Length: 405
Image 1: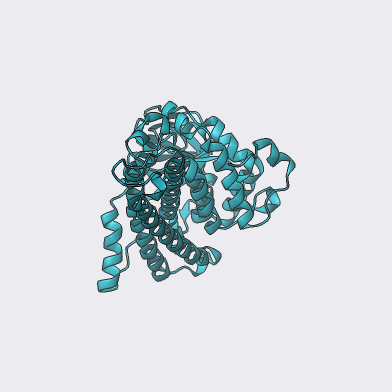
Image 2 (image 1 turned 90 degrees about the vertical axis):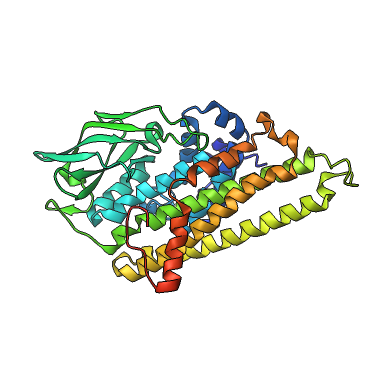
């Protein structure tokens, strides 16, 4: 395990390239891994963990270098999320969602808006949360002079109390027109509720939020010019990008499960008394299982990296994104999501076959990997991702942009 401490990051130069930042993420993961199982059981608000992400520089990975950011791209961000999630799936999810909401200004906003947000976020190390659950459509936005007023409730708000700023989403009263805005997380009328009590991803602060007349200037309405929204096809990349974030922490959690199990097998597992082997690592079925699961994980990771690189080409020239290039990318992301879901669930389940009954002890914490993957993979039905791929193969039908496709 790494002996790096957060204090070392203050005295060492920041990484200069993607591999350096991925290595920095691995150092963060090593710190998180020391008490990951205990923190999962405690379920406390992860203030210290977010401070760790800030001290390491990971929160400003996508930010402009002119303002203290690392200036890295999305493929690097996905790899960083994967590394962090190996140690702690909740913190991996928080970091991935942070990257998404940090990028939301560029996704939807005008150049003036996103340049301002990205500069401020990098300069002040903002950590982003989001109250943008698309299945809750009861947040209404009204006008009051030069302000917009958000009122309603969202049943999920990942990041909530640990965030510095929160992305809000609502619908203009009496219309079907959506509006996004970034507000300080301590804004008057914005109340986060401590009601996230699910079996997995327990530290993601994903509870409900009430918006009781949260005010923000009209100028913060992303993508609006003269109170009119200026749409681009690029605006619809939010779904494939966040789905690749999901893929990243699914595969990271799966890798963490496999690494944790392998350590247990080497150091604690006992061979079967009727198997004819003195060590668990010599059991043929144990060797075969690790080989099988590792091959599946490596294949899923390689495919995810390939799709991430394909997506970066769209980010490199946003104005050139067409409905077709966007749709083809979404199909590839859907395939990666389906594969990552199946592989991660299989790994998190089957590691118990090669660690044995004693590995189910609460102190080992091996169950957290399965609980984390099982919880979040229910975000949207994976069958619909396979359907996107199947319709494309059989009919050449591209998925229509929705909140989930």
